[in-house]
Picture 1 (spheres, helix red, strand yellow):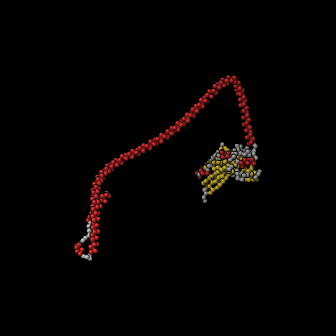
Picture 2: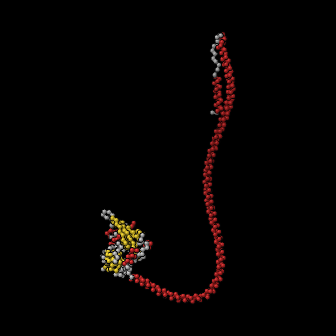
Picture 3: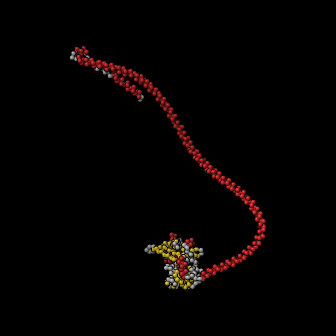
Length: 459
């Protein structure tokens, strides 16, 4: 509600209440004459008179206040009428405002629709702007690349111009040199004609000298071959001392270590074996040869092998062996292939097989376990051309008597390897080292491969 209208209504209610109230005292059966006649009540009459005068004064004040209130009420009524007019005007203005508001809402809805359309257009414009920015960046990058290519092309052009200038300068110098050389060539042609006759004469002399030198070279080559053959034959005819053969063995020996595990009734049994041997060169390859039982490869053990590992020590280097081969179906001699570069790095000089193992009547036997050695007289076993018969006791000049055992090495007096002791009093002659049955060792070992090798050995 309007504040002014509320104030007018409150004033109107207050005036109405004041108009209904009678502030005059109630006087019932009042007789002034009787009152005046009473002398005793003179003072009371005076008091009442004063009270009446006071009351009249208050009534006059009330009348003045009432008149003033009525005047104010009239003014307020007039203002109220004006306020009613204003209220009607305000109601009319409100209706107009509501009508305007309805139009405004409609305009707002249409504006919202336009704004939604404008938002979509703005998003489309933003997308187009982003696309244009990406295109601009791409064009900027292409422009930079083209500028870089242009700079590179300009640098190349400058280099080409510099090179062209340099080539022109070279061409000028070459032209000058060509002119000089033409002059020299003409002079040389003149000298060539004069020298050609001398060359022809010298060619004839050279051909004669060449024929004489070829004849001399053939004669010298024949003499050299004869000398080499004579030296080799002389070396083979001159035996080495027993100590020299052992010293060469000691300086070039190798150690092969074997670790094997066999199956048994009470569980697996592990065994470690070792063999002192030498490196032998055969057909361009290097082999370490040893007697099979020294590696724990007897036929009865091979059938029960579960694991087998082999390592060879050359100097201060130890190598893993991956495959082991047997020399033939007898299975008495085994060997492993050794890389040549490892042998050369260890400084070991390989031995060769004796081409004529029976050239000398004696041979050198070196004990592979406790480094004893001695000489013995060789004798071929009857009916066994591949074996040598050795007496059970040997006489050594330095270390006393010892009995040969399986795995001992037999050398010729010229330091070549003849064979290996494979039985008591019998040595296997090594005429070649062509590998026979084989099996993988180490991590690649398998019982099937060992069984296959054993079958090949049993044939």
